Image 1 (cartoon, rainbow, N blue to C red):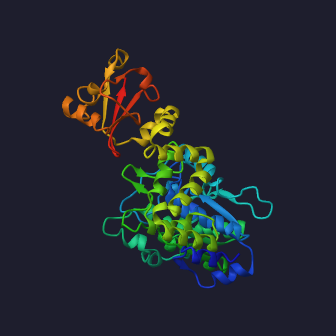
Image 2: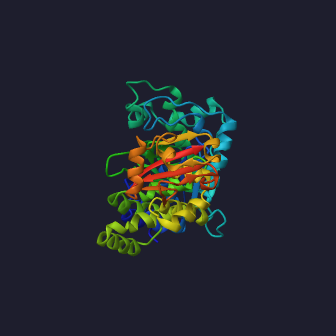
Image 3: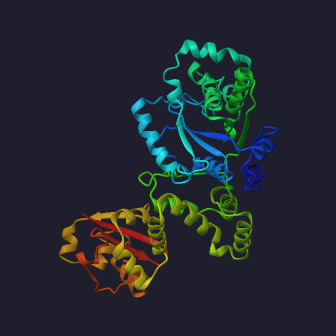
Length: 426
């Protein structure tokens, strides 16, 4: 497998140092990508870099995932408009443990031939004192060289601390240390990291007279101009406690056709011929949303497991289900899943006493719920057969009791196909 060629057709190369492809074809080597431990979970923005390491390993090379335990205490100015809050050692260790667990779902740490390895740059920085560092490392890189970096130039107007200014030296030394101790000869990363990566190759050249290489990937952008991996509620995380498997699944299902043709190359391991066939089928019948369904299944299974994928799939179908199938799904749903599906739907809370003594459907729609404006409107809507309770059509004499509660807590009212209202019973 030609690693560079694989990344090229997938659209995963932004910059590449001359001679990199030839070097990788000539010998198996070690390479690394750094991950920022500012949270105990990675988000889907990190998936691009994870997948690059996956391809690197599949090509027979040795992938290193570097957790920035030291650099996380400094803060990378790249792409940042202001100084970041620094983390203490306890928070960093918790974050590192979380990130390692997620990386193990993609990388093979037990391979006999080229196992992935996790390293923490705090291990080689913790005993390196300041005077030794500026003497051994700082003297090899000029201030002019450091000032020319985009990550620094963009911050000159608003101000940049010496701490963040020195970040490129610290990251550069990471590359040098891995080059000397782990035979790492290539660093990979996002396009915003090019300046920091090149500082590393320059240190290797100036200190050791060695050669090292670099590849960066483009930052993924959505066709509509909105930021990839972001929703109104924030980042899409890999941790199910931060982003539920249902919401994770929904993110990919709701991708546009243009974005999905891009995502299936970047985030899955399907071959070029398989992807070309999937894209062809999708274009012939875009309404079936083949690409979106394929990506959502592949990633949800890989990150959250098949059981969670099936649960997310069933929950997604619920909005479109009717009759007995819908009733069965509602009978099996949890409070947490119900809330996630109907998040943002208008909701009213009533007392359990109202349900225990019997609540008429008219009162539920009007007086107690406020879904409809008047008793007359409610009666007309019911007679027009447009009102459902828990996905079942109702008559005007329907009396609601505790047996109607979904997950022992909710009533789902619906007018027409898409107009929902939730009553929560305390």
